Length: 274
Image (cartoon, rainbow, N blue to C red; front, top):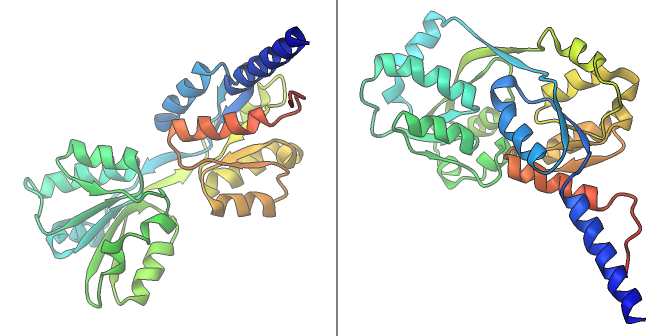
């Protein structure tokens, strides 16, 4: 009797470790080339089989005369919001040509830790919301306290979300966009997908644009492939498009995505109940 109970518990422990380690799980990583590797490495360390199929790449845009004026007027803004590491790298490279010393009165905001790290490399300290989304950013007291007539500059990619701007304009805040890059689907994404010999167990999706590109890429398989996303907004979008299984990670950080996948994987079809 005791021996039976021992082996039952040992079996439970084995399956829990096996599932947590993601052994053999076939995962598609759709993050951009310059941001995919940390997640791929984290998943592979847990035993997953990872295929990178980037579904967005960022192409720098030429500055218009109006946008160049935004750079020159940096010290006239109360807040600068940077929406991505790409926006940080491109924007700060341009700004540093005009500003050998940063204006001291400007408050810098970063959408996430990866973006804040780029700012830190330029000697700037940024506030990062706990929830690394536009919704999380709007919860910051420094934004809620902005008043009529104050100004924000947003460093971003062309065609991004307008949630922050729309909310701040209701407070009377003037918001200017500095579009630094445009997004497009890499030309080799179709080829990479066609090279898949087996259907993936899971795909990682980190933006609405990537979600739409994924749907176009995989066609009839779209709803059947489980998906991990990084916000409630993406959950709603994926479910509205018919995805059957949607897993939510706390952020785009590799450790958060890995944790979400581990929790999902533990709950798959293995009868290890006590």
